[in-house]
Length: 73
Image (cartoon, helix red, strand yellow):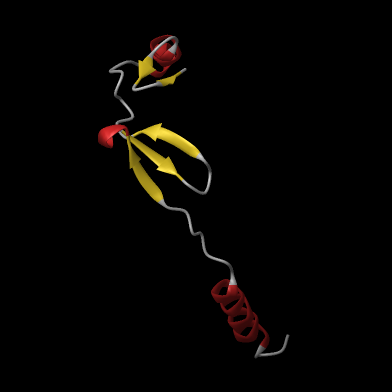
C-alpha cells in the first residue's frame, strides 16, 4: 500500500466535510416560552419534556383532548 494513501484519504474526507452544506434551521420560542418551533422540520415541541408530570405510558392519555393555547392533540 502506498505510504501516502491514508493521509491523502483523510485529507479528501476532511475537505468533503468542509464543503458539506450546513443546517440553517432556527429554533423559535412559542407559547410564551413553553414550546420551541424548529423551522427546518416544521415541528413544535414542549420545552419541558416532563410538562405533564407523567410517565411515557400515560403521556398520550394526558395529551388527548388537551388544549394548550390553541394547539390540541
